Length: 52
Image 1: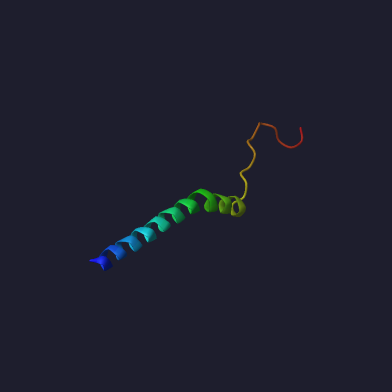
Image 2: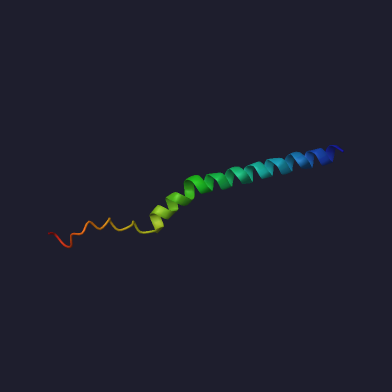
């Protein structure tokens, strides 16, 4: 009985760490990597071509 409760506690800790890690990756790491890898978008076209 003790062993079953112990495994349940370990499983809950692993699940909590996995959820926290996925949340951290989605909010902090992936947007920062996307800004470094992907080129910046072109500026908005204002109707003028060249320096005029």
